[in-house]
Length: 339
Image 1 (tube, rainbow, N blue to C red):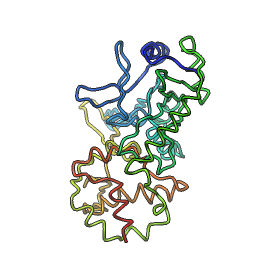
Image 2: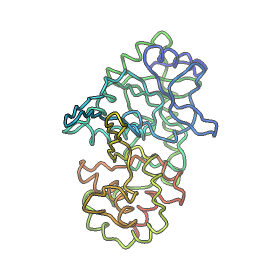
Image 3: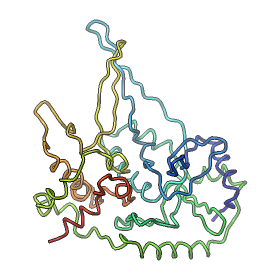
Image 4: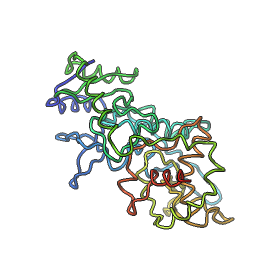
């Protein structure tokens, strides 16, 4: 495995940025981290996770789909799609890396979402193994190994070095562009560090969280549970949980009249909003209870029912941290499991 000293990581990032557009987690003034485009002097954050997930690179919060130009009764449809440039996302954690696979099951199946596919095809994902999981982490419940996050290239921090391992052809090509900065390294200490990280995780509050009681065959058991009323009463319907979630994939489409034509945009939507899926026939989920239930049933039952048992959550813990009333998927799971 190749490696570079951590005090030379800025050289590595600069070399990658010279070859392709580079994005990496950077600390904000409030101490939290977010993905930003690399610029001279940008420093890689040591934060465990970014406020918003790396999902934004493939499924942005807003994007223009097309334009319409009208002249009398004549309507011209303008295709605004452009081929995406090659880019690198550096420092993606294991949970976010798994979220890409979940989104692929939505946007890369027939009919393929060409906007999403364009970005996926041009992106090189460089993951960063975790060495100090937080109390809000529960990725292991979904079979995710935080010490082996995958991606096109995997990076590990250990003993003053950054270890680099290419996993795909795309990753190999990226590593070759910076090969002059890298040296061969012994991985014995690295393997010990991975084992220590797993030992640390095993002591955390959610380490034993299990998905055994959830899945696609639990519709009848949970849909009519009386627990939903109690759980949903405190929910504000603010949508924070959906906007920070790396696997939420719902969107709305709006047309805007600019006075010179129509522009059609896609933007994130939330099943927690009263306008979600509202049609001319009305709102299929008129109560907060029904909307609240929809979110968690989708993650725990509906999605695995349609995707060979894979859950619609990756255990990143963002909703545990950011919900203003401290309601989250773990509390819902534990409440539903109570007999």
